[in-house]
Length: 268
Image (cartoon, rainbow, N blue to C red):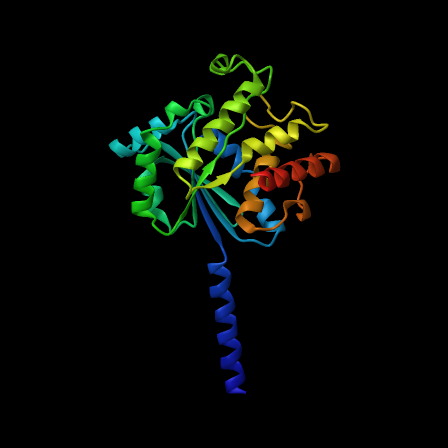
């Protein structure tokens, strides 16, 4: 009986250890677009898919690679750090990039360009290279990712939209070209094609409704689309089989957005 009890306790201990090690830890060095993509719908998708996840998002509104780099050089505690554990989200103001890099052993760390510069290749360097070097120094085991952002709605009033001749197609093409050049230079980066997924979703019956204000994602199914891309990439599970949908989504919206996210990953 004593041996059986010991064996049971060892099995229980092993289960808890393996469960903890199964947790995926992601850190986004981002802005409001990473807020849209990972802070609302990713945790419930992972819960429904039986995948423990821990999410960190370094948020500074409109933050470009150049601004991230400036904050890094000065070790500025400029960020609102959003931390999601066990589905509970906490906000910590006055956080620095180095603090976040030291906080945990992250499995995935994503970088992204500010939306207004996302299709301007010249805006990426030398800032991206310097950020990658720093991230590698702090987190050599983490997989570095690039979150591709999305183009604006055709009727967007964003002040930077004229850079793309106020054309969604031109902005799409510019983002795609910048992404291609980026991955050619940094082939070790894993692409998170949220922008591609939003483009594909716009080609469905959803139309050009994926943004709530012309550039930030629709609360009901825009954010869900981007989160499905993250979910499938991180877990390797087909997002189309995930049962979760938020309370306001229709079955059609769930189906179309999941299909778009899956196709975006299949196409890349």
